[in-house]
Image (cartoon, rainbow, N blue to C red; front, side, top):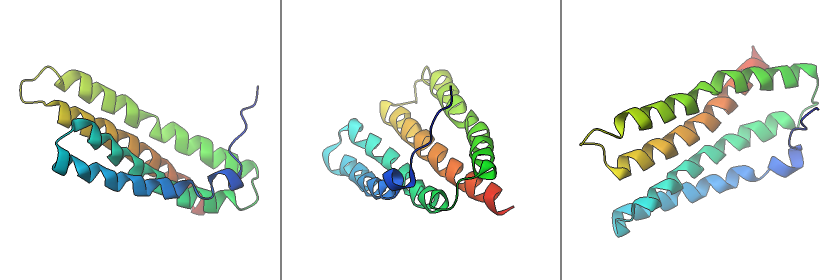
Length: 123
């Protein structure tokens, strides 16, 4: 079974969701820890570069570069979950810190994928 990748048209404007990340700053006004999850939307800025590369002809090299970038970035969520699980028992770890770690892990995963995808495409 072959998984189809998203078409360039469907992700062309997905990067605009990155602006929702600025909603995370409402935490400092409201104090609601769930507001910190908005910071994970900063990861959508990576789609600006992904869409530019997807606009080109998608050949075997394109899919190979995408696969290699996905393999390299797969460790980031695993490390993030380990850090959350390991550190959550410490008394100085707050729920805000756990939520920020989750949001940071998500954003870094998407941005790292876009960077590695671009890197493999150019080198």
